[in-house]
Amino acid sequence: MTIVCTGYGIFAPDTRNIEQYLYNLQNGVCLLKVIENGGPNGQSNILGPIQEELKEIDSDHKLKRLPKATKIGIVAAKEAIKSSRIDMKNKKVGLFMGTSLGAAAEKLYQDAIQYANNKEYRKVPIRFSHFSNYHGITAEIGYYIGVKGIVKTIVTGCTSSLEAIEEAMLYLESGKIDVAIVGGTDTPICNATTYAFAKTKSLPINQTLEEGAVPFQKSSKGFAMSEAAGVIILEREEEAVQREADIKGEIVNVVSNNDGIDIFSSDESGEQLINALKEVTAGRKPDYINSQALGIQLNDQIEKKCSKLLFDHKIPYTSIKSMYGNPLGASGILQVISALLSVQYNFIPPTIRTTKQGFEEMNIITQTTYQEIKEVAITNHGHSGNNACAYIKEYRTK
Image: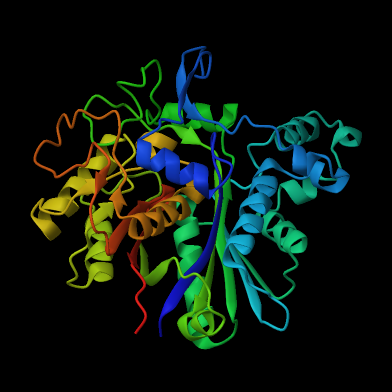
C-alpha cells in the first residue's frame, strides 16, 4: 500500500508558513540567535525561539489561554489542511501529534509548580491540569480543527513526530482511518531545560554562531534548543488520486527502535541508529541523507559512522538543524517537510555555518545544491535512546 502526503503546514522561528520555510531552506538562512544571559549563570546561549505575536490566535479568548505549543500546532495543522484541499466530511480522520516536553516549559506550568511547593494552593490555576497533560495539546488541536475520532499523542523525545508518522501509517494501512493529520509541536525553552541540558554539557554556552550549535563541526559544544510545530496530511494513494489531490510525495517507511541502555548513559556505538537506517533504506540509494546531526559531538560522530558503514561516504549528508536548531519533538516533522520540499523543488538544503572540521571525509553539503531529487532518507535520535528513520520518495503516478 502506498501512503502519500497531500498537505503540509509549519510554524517555526521567523517561519509562519511553507513558503517562508522553502525560502529559508533554499537560501540557507540561519534562524538561530545568540541570547545574552540565556545560560544558567548569565552566560550566552544559542536558541531558536518563536518571538512572533500570535495575533490571529490570541484574539480568541479561548485560544489565548492555551499553551504556546498548542497554539502553534493549531496554526500548522490549519495550514496543512488548507494545503491538502481535503474535505474531511464523511471520512474517518485520525490525529497523531508528537511532543517531548509538552507545555512543561511554559510559564504557567513553572509558576504552578512553585505555588504548589509553597503551599499557595489558591494560586494554582485551574488550567494547570491541562498544561501538565501532554495529551491535552493534541486533544485541543483536534477540537479546533474538528477531529473527534482517533486522537493520539506520541511522547518519545526528539523522535516523537517521526514515530507519530509511523503509527499513523499503520492506522491508514489497516483501514481504521482514511486520513491522518500528523506532526509534532514543542516549545521547550525555559530555565529548567536550559539548566538541565547545561549540566550534561550539551548546550553551546558562550559560543558564537560560528562555533556553537553547528552540525558536523568539532568545535561545537552542543545543540540549539528551539521551538516549532509541523503537520502533514497523509492519505492512501488511491483516495488521493481519486480526489485529484496535489500529492507532495510518498512516505515509504518509518523505522524506530531504542538503544536499550540506561537513560543516564549514552550509546557511543550508534548500533541501533545504524540498524534503523539500514532497514529503512533497504538497499535503496537515497539522493541524500537529511540528518539529525545537531552539534553534539557524540550524535554527529554516530552520523559519520552511518555514512561510512552504509554508504562509504558517497551519499551526500546535510542537517537543517544548522538553520533551525532542535525543536525536540517537532524536529522529525520539520525534516520530513524539508525532504518533501526537496523532491518537489529538486534541491538539497545546506548545512550552514560548518567548516566540516573533524568530518572532512563525509560528503557534507554546505551550499544549496540544485539537482534531481527523487529519494531522501531521514535520521533522528532522541533523549532516552529512541531512534527513528524515515524514507521519502518523489511521487509518480503508476
